[in-house]
Length: 183
Image 1: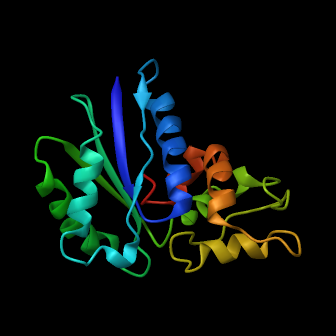
Image 2 (image 1 turned 120 degrees about the horizontal axis):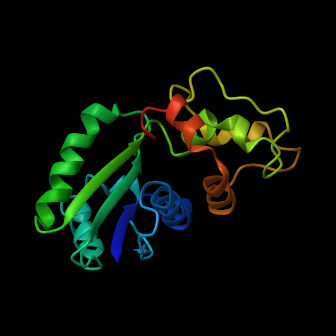
Protein backbone atom coordinates (compact mmCIF):
# COMPACT_ATOMS: atom_id res chain seq x y z
CA UNK A 1 0.00 0.00 0.00
CA UNK A 2 1.24 3.46 -0.93
CA UNK A 3 0.02 6.46 1.08
CA UNK A 4 0.32 9.87 -0.55
CA UNK A 5 -0.67 12.65 1.78
CA UNK A 6 -0.77 16.24 0.60
CA UNK A 7 -0.73 19.94 1.40
CA UNK A 8 -2.72 22.16 -0.94
CA UNK A 9 -3.73 25.77 -1.39
CA UNK A 10 -7.47 25.85 -1.93
CA UNK A 11 -10.75 24.05 -1.37
CA UNK A 12 -10.90 23.01 -5.03
CA UNK A 13 -7.57 21.22 -4.70
CA UNK A 14 -8.69 19.50 -1.49
CA UNK A 15 -11.31 17.73 -3.61
CA UNK A 16 -9.39 17.43 -6.90
CA UNK A 17 -5.85 16.41 -5.94
CA UNK A 18 -6.70 12.91 -4.65
CA UNK A 19 -8.53 12.27 -7.93
CA UNK A 20 -5.53 13.46 -9.92
CA UNK A 21 -3.13 11.32 -7.88
CA UNK A 22 -5.32 8.25 -8.44
CA UNK A 23 -5.50 8.90 -12.19
CA UNK A 24 -1.72 9.22 -12.41
CA UNK A 25 -1.22 6.09 -10.29
CA UNK A 26 -3.57 4.07 -12.51
CA UNK A 27 -1.44 5.11 -15.47
CA UNK A 28 2.01 4.80 -13.90
CA UNK A 29 1.55 2.20 -11.14
CA UNK A 30 -1.18 -0.19 -12.28
CA UNK A 31 -2.08 -2.78 -9.68
CA UNK A 32 -0.75 -0.78 -6.71
CA UNK A 33 -3.05 -0.01 -3.80
CA UNK A 34 -3.06 3.72 -3.24
CA UNK A 35 -4.44 5.67 -0.29
CA UNK A 36 -4.80 9.46 -0.47
CA UNK A 37 -5.93 10.95 2.84
CA UNK A 38 -7.86 14.22 2.64
CA UNK A 39 -5.33 16.95 1.84
CA UNK A 40 -4.55 19.52 4.49
CA UNK A 41 -5.18 23.06 3.27
CA UNK A 42 -2.84 25.94 3.87
CA UNK A 43 -3.86 29.09 1.97
CA UNK A 44 -1.06 30.49 -0.17
CA UNK A 45 -1.25 33.75 1.76
CA UNK A 46 0.14 31.89 4.78
CA UNK A 47 3.12 30.25 3.04
CA UNK A 48 5.40 33.06 4.15
CA UNK A 49 4.26 32.95 7.78
CA UNK A 50 7.18 31.38 9.65
CA UNK A 51 6.50 27.77 10.57
CA UNK A 52 3.14 27.41 8.82
CA UNK A 53 4.23 25.36 5.81
CA UNK A 54 6.39 23.23 8.08
CA UNK A 55 3.48 22.63 10.47
CA UNK A 56 1.17 21.51 7.66
CA UNK A 57 3.79 19.29 6.04
CA UNK A 58 4.32 17.69 9.45
CA UNK A 59 0.58 17.04 9.76
CA UNK A 60 0.51 15.47 6.30
CA UNK A 61 3.66 13.43 7.00
CA UNK A 62 1.98 11.95 10.07
CA UNK A 63 -0.46 10.15 7.73
CA UNK A 64 2.26 8.47 5.68
CA UNK A 65 3.33 4.89 6.31
CA UNK A 66 6.60 3.34 5.18
CA UNK A 67 5.59 3.44 1.48
CA UNK A 68 4.54 6.84 0.29
CA UNK A 69 5.19 10.48 0.90
CA UNK A 70 3.84 13.99 0.99
CA UNK A 71 2.96 16.00 -2.10
CA UNK A 72 2.79 19.78 -1.77
CA UNK A 73 0.80 21.45 -4.58
CA UNK A 74 0.40 25.20 -5.11
CA UNK A 75 -0.29 27.69 -7.86
CA UNK A 76 2.80 29.73 -8.71
CA UNK A 77 0.55 32.69 -9.61
CA UNK A 78 2.88 35.47 -10.77
CA UNK A 79 5.98 33.96 -9.18
CA UNK A 80 8.50 32.14 -11.34
CA UNK A 81 8.17 28.46 -10.41
CA UNK A 82 11.92 27.87 -10.89
CA UNK A 83 12.70 30.62 -8.38
CA UNK A 84 9.85 29.97 -5.94
CA UNK A 85 10.05 26.17 -5.73
CA UNK A 86 13.53 25.56 -4.25
CA UNK A 87 12.84 27.45 -1.03
CA UNK A 88 9.45 25.79 -0.55
CA UNK A 89 10.90 22.36 -1.24
CA UNK A 90 13.79 22.88 1.17
CA UNK A 91 11.42 24.00 3.91
CA UNK A 92 9.06 21.08 3.22
CA UNK A 93 11.78 18.43 3.18
CA UNK A 94 13.43 19.76 6.32
CA UNK A 95 10.38 18.94 8.45
CA UNK A 96 10.56 15.16 8.29
CA UNK A 97 13.70 13.90 6.54
CA UNK A 98 12.39 10.35 6.99
CA UNK A 99 9.40 11.04 4.71
CA UNK A 100 9.70 11.64 0.97
CA UNK A 101 8.32 15.05 0.00
CA UNK A 102 7.55 16.28 -3.51
CA UNK A 103 6.48 19.71 -4.67
CA UNK A 104 4.47 20.78 -7.71
CA UNK A 105 3.93 24.41 -8.59
CA UNK A 106 1.37 24.88 -11.33
CA UNK A 107 2.64 27.59 -13.63
CA UNK A 108 0.17 30.38 -12.93
CA UNK A 109 -2.60 28.07 -11.70
CA UNK A 110 -3.92 24.49 -11.72
CA UNK A 111 -6.49 25.48 -14.32
CA UNK A 112 -3.67 26.19 -16.81
CA UNK A 113 -3.42 22.40 -17.08
CA UNK A 114 -7.06 22.39 -18.19
CA UNK A 115 -6.31 25.08 -20.77
CA UNK A 116 -3.41 23.04 -22.15
CA UNK A 117 -5.83 20.11 -22.61
CA UNK A 118 -8.86 22.25 -23.48
CA UNK A 119 -9.95 20.24 -26.51
CA UNK A 120 -10.31 17.16 -24.27
CA UNK A 121 -12.74 19.16 -22.11
CA UNK A 122 -14.95 20.20 -25.02
CA UNK A 123 -18.61 19.70 -24.11
CA UNK A 124 -17.87 19.19 -20.40
CA UNK A 125 -19.33 21.34 -17.60
CA UNK A 126 -21.02 23.66 -20.11
CA UNK A 127 -17.88 24.28 -22.15
CA UNK A 128 -18.43 24.50 -25.93
CA UNK A 129 -18.05 21.43 -28.14
CA UNK A 130 -15.40 23.18 -30.24
CA UNK A 131 -13.18 24.28 -27.33
CA UNK A 132 -9.54 24.77 -28.29
CA UNK A 133 -6.59 25.71 -26.06
CA UNK A 134 -5.15 29.22 -26.03
CA UNK A 135 -1.73 29.75 -27.60
CA UNK A 136 0.18 29.88 -24.30
CA UNK A 137 -1.84 28.16 -21.55
CA UNK A 138 0.76 28.77 -18.84
CA UNK A 139 1.46 32.33 -19.92
CA UNK A 140 -2.16 33.34 -19.58
CA UNK A 141 -3.10 35.02 -16.30
CA UNK A 142 -6.67 34.16 -15.35
CA UNK A 143 -7.27 30.58 -16.47
CA UNK A 144 -10.41 30.40 -14.31
CA UNK A 145 -11.77 33.48 -16.03
CA UNK A 146 -10.85 32.03 -19.46
CA UNK A 147 -12.94 28.95 -18.65
CA UNK A 148 -15.80 31.09 -17.30
CA UNK A 149 -15.94 33.19 -20.49
CA UNK A 150 -16.48 30.02 -22.48
CA UNK A 151 -19.36 28.74 -20.37
CA UNK A 152 -23.01 29.53 -21.09
CA UNK A 153 -24.41 32.88 -19.91
CA UNK A 154 -25.05 32.89 -16.19
CA UNK A 155 -22.61 30.05 -15.57
CA UNK A 156 -19.01 30.45 -14.45
CA UNK A 157 -16.14 28.19 -13.51
CA UNK A 158 -16.03 27.48 -9.78
CA UNK A 159 -13.06 25.53 -8.46
CA UNK A 160 -15.04 23.94 -5.65
CA UNK A 161 -17.62 22.62 -8.13
CA UNK A 162 -15.78 22.17 -11.45
CA UNK A 163 -12.16 21.37 -10.58
CA UNK A 164 -12.72 17.72 -9.63
CA UNK A 165 -14.90 16.77 -12.64
CA UNK A 166 -12.51 18.48 -15.05
CA UNK A 167 -9.54 16.83 -13.30
CA UNK A 168 -11.20 13.47 -13.86
CA UNK A 169 -11.64 14.27 -17.56
CA UNK A 170 -8.71 16.24 -19.00
CA UNK A 171 -6.33 14.39 -21.30
CA UNK A 172 -2.90 13.88 -19.74
CA UNK A 173 -1.04 13.72 -23.05
CA UNK A 174 -2.50 17.06 -24.16
CA UNK A 175 -1.66 18.61 -20.79
CA UNK A 176 1.89 17.25 -20.95
CA UNK A 177 2.35 18.70 -24.44
CA UNK A 178 1.07 22.14 -23.49
CA UNK A 179 2.13 22.55 -19.86
CA UNK A 180 5.65 22.21 -18.53
CA UNK A 181 4.40 22.41 -14.94
CA UNK A 182 2.04 19.47 -15.44
CA UNK A 183 4.93 17.42 -16.76
